Amino acid sequence: MATIEVRKNSTGRITSYRVEWYDKGERNRQTLPTETAAVQWKNLLEAVKHDTQAAQAALLRQASQSPSFEEVALGHIERLINVREYTIKRYRGYIKNHFSGLGHLPVDQITEDDLIRWIKGMVKKGCSPKTVANVHGFIHASMNSAVRRRLRQDNPCNGRLLPKDDSTEDKAMFLTMGQMNLIIERADEWQRPMWILLIGAGLRLGEATALNRTDFQLDAPTPSVRITKAYQEMEDGWAIGAPKTKKARRTVALAPSTVDAIRARVEAAGPSRPVFTISPETLVFPQHRQWLDAWYDAVKAAEALESAPLKIDKRPRIHDIRHSHASMMIAGGMNLYELANRLGHESIITTTKTYGHLVPDAHFRAAAMVETALTGIIEP
Image (cartoon, rainbow, N blue to C red):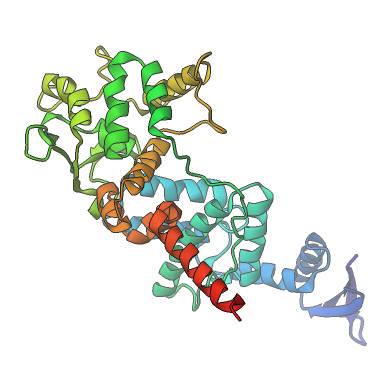
């Protein structure tokens, strides 16, 4: 417990106040000119359990004239250009849900130790390594903004050692065409063309729900669908906007069987109306929640089949249809560069990280190299 000693001169007049405390077994003293300052320092020490360094940092924060980090982060968002509204909404969610321990601090007083405590706190509350990395990336960018605005001299995020993803299972699930057919057969008849398009073209759900009749070229020498837009989640709901990335604006070739499955739906759609709706009567768009429910209903029905049931270890998401399409393209001989263009990935690095392990030639070449090396080693 910290104590305050009143200091007097030879005439008995109070000249100062001395605060005394123990930090890690070592006695510390601080002389202050007023009783108010001494009481403030004593209370601050006791609040941080006599940690001198923490108390000094708290005192500097109280005296700082800099804006809070939350204010800086919000200002960083306002300065962003050519960023999707969905991304802006996600960043605001980071501030609301993941800025505990940082947001209220003056931006010029945030230290490396604060970042380490924040990372440990994120892990403790159960956030995945990917979530920690995503939020840390936003914090890093906001700190860079603070440096550019000369609100602080350096970025404390530099060199941060983030938690590794030590999960032992793939996030992506790859369905065979046989498994997809079992699910499609159990789906509502009106909804089947949507599932056939997704597995046949590898589109994102938001891209597919935004399609209208003029996006399709079903009678061209190579039938195709042109992706120029996608449904996005905005601040106040959903709206059609640009695709996820520049390269997501693309033309996707369609197989004859896909064309046959979707032709009637495409030709029946109005010029400016969505081709794929959850039911003939529903006119509320984009219906993503309803599509998710419809997909899971079809999956559960396929799992419940008595003869030839759907045998899967975990329940696939709608986005796993896109992963399954990619795996089928690779199995058919498509290389990763072609696949990246077909899927609309901004970088082939994304394609390689997600699907590189599915490329059979790479595995065969690696096995052959190992065999050659081992044979060379064991030969006399």
